Image (cartoon, rainbow, N blue to C red; front, side):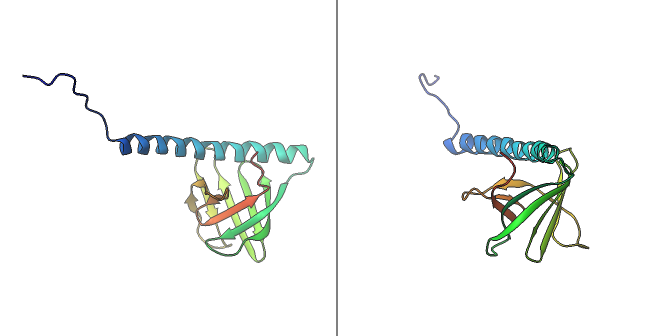
Length: 134
């Protein structure tokens, strides 16, 4: 004899987990897309070969410091500089983003993400303020 009127549902956590993964994937794609587009637009609007924006940056839990983002090859290569720090980024257009924290160190793949305090991070490197993404 079968059960009548019984509904079997997924646990609430599974559905929320799936939704969260979808939202995170869309967010990463949007960050990568806007990074490429706005760096291209920013450099052509200024009439120069490099787009620059002022903001605050840090690595890991260091104190926030004023920094600059300069794109020498918009959408493909950009650099964050502050104090004695220089962090280079390469984006190959396929969705893969590479970062090098110091000259001579190895490149490593990073995924951009937003934090609760509205900072944009690539691995342990974070920026906030007038980031040229909007």
